Length: 210
Image (cartoon, rainbow, N blue to C red; front, side, top):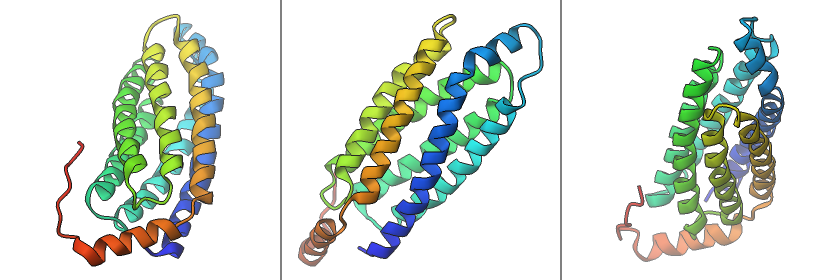
């Protein structure tokens, strides 16, 4: 494994994830304000237009990083990274839908359930992949998106959306902690594992998880 390439991608993804998570926390905090404004027919606050657009920009950076990470691996690991990439595309679409009051938010939360399921599956695969350097980080992010499933489901239900938003803040915190683990993960042991696998028999097929 190219350690420099890994660190470069993880570093760029890390800062985009941190910024995006902070945006998510702010959006979760002001959800009630936005809902009241929409119900009264008032225009959406300017920050609920700017924040989703900034979030989409962050996710594009993350998408580019995961696209390159997927090229560094093979088999189920590469497939899982591509699945994460699919989830990120859904997030970008959801951010654009957030610009539409009420209806767009509901559809965005439905998409959230879908991408959370994708992430739980994908990061579960990465957690179990011996050649993946950040297995502990993948496990923590998997746990975060299990909680996110509950959060997105609650956000769809009238009157309890605030509770879902509160869980969303917890999810964002766990994601940041998970990506700190990504940054501190050692690539040496994973690199040696990958080398042993490739030098012995890389032609062995793996069972697809998804």
